[in-house]
Image (cartoon, rainbow, N blue to C red; front, side, top):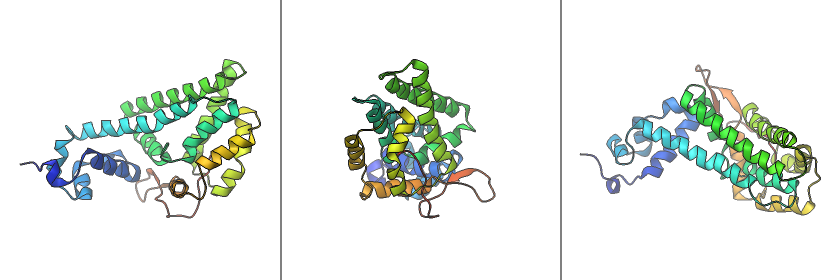
Length: 246
């Protein structure tokens, strides 16, 4: 007899959260029902109250990533902006706030895509959707369509490259360079009020920014012992900070 949900004390969100942790820490191949059951301290059979099978769980992980990464970048790009520099700062919110965009999860999905054609197609579609939204932001302001696309690619690919390369900058240094990043991406001097608003909604001394710092530390790339698969270093394993825009 399978354990009823009320008896196990776990729900589908618990299984998904645990699976996301394993995906980030060890890769998609390590996301297994028995491993999750041990981590959640419940029976393997309780998994089937919420999921058809392991493939169903993996599909939900992919859906979570699409909704919580791509969806939020697109939403920020579509927000009203009085000037392009303000719009760029809206995008930067995603890089500054891991609740909006988790670089560890994005990296894990990209690593998974190297081994699964279906996931690779999903990643390609997500990159195209993100770039289209950022290009549309630039296109709302003076300049031709080619310029808008090139600026969008520069902004987006540079940030993804920061995560992939594990570039390190301290949080104060990142904030000190915010104005220069904005100018380099859009060619417009940001309004000091917009920079202040960005700093206010992404404060360096807040609990959320502490999480940001920990996630940035986690974004350095190394090799697994013996396996050779790139992984995200757990926060606190080294003292560096990954860089990025904003």
